[in-house]
Length: 112
Length: 113
Image 1 (cartoon, chains in turn blue, cyan):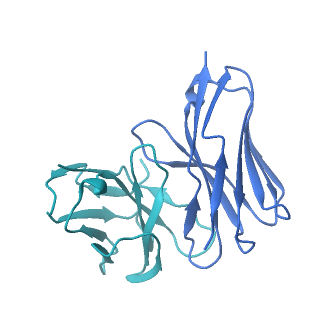
Image 2 (tube, one colour):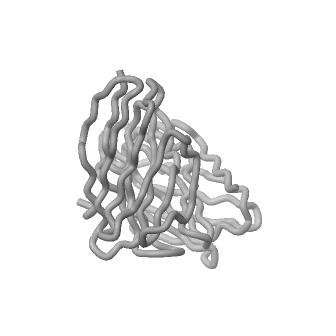
């Protein structure tokens, strides 16, 4: 089955700096890559996603890039704010049921 | 609010017991997924149902079982509970098959003493 690895496990940045989280996946058939944000004690919520026919997608301060050849994708957060502090999960999914394989999460702390 | 509801919010029980967690998907969603999140751990996929049928199985123990009913709500049954089963259990729903966002419920925190 699919195996998703996520790095780093923890990340601290100064407010205003950029944060980058990277994920790799193993199954070349995976074609949908969502990113979820989970604040402390809350449910995971989708923040951005990308499909395999797209190399990059942006939504205000958040962007995701995908390299299908290398089987890795990354989340970029620019101009970080304290409210960006949370755990971020990447996931990969194929077209055989929408089953998500999640990475182990990155705990992001934005220092004011 | 994602539109996905889970009950109960908290559950405290003893080892060896059996519990049932309930999930109601968003209106119109046909797929339901169950995940386990242990302390400081990621989201472990357990099982998926689509319109009443089991469609995918992840790392679900034999002591665990689930089903999706005709009204599309789902229940996750955990039996012969062990201390290690203490975790946050999330239910998620999506509209269907393929590239669909999964909407997560608030979770049920299970504590096994």
